[in-house]
Amino acid sequence: MQSNVRKNRFLLVTALETILLGAYFIANSFRFGAPDLFNTVASHIDDPPFAAADIVVGTVILVAALYDIRPLIKWCYVAATCVWTLYAMAFLLQNIEMMGHPFAHLDCWLMFAVAGRTILEAWAGDAN
View (cartoon, rainbow, N blue to C red):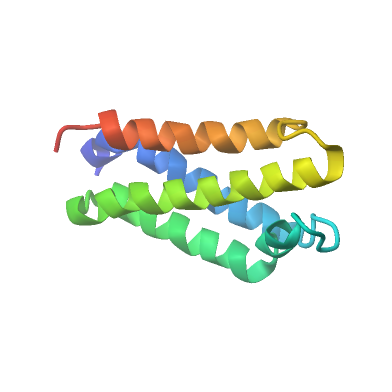
């Protein structure tokens, strides 16, 4: 298992980030304000069912990385990229609606950075 951890270390970090994202939104439900024109996605994305889905996705990614399940790892990159891009877009729309500037808060930048890192790792990661 140590060789799997060494080989899939970036995917493990992504899995832990995704699990912690879900745990944060379960602990702090309803972070976003009431639904507005742009805020409809953001007002529902912090609800416990979406957060629980993030925890499930993160756990599947964690298991696939720890046990080096090669066919599943390719789909884990897709799932992680989708989750982080969806949250980044929700934060982006929230920032546009509330502050008038798309990158007003650091959280939006960080979500896009995690999504970009996941895409880069899927493209330039291990050769297997």
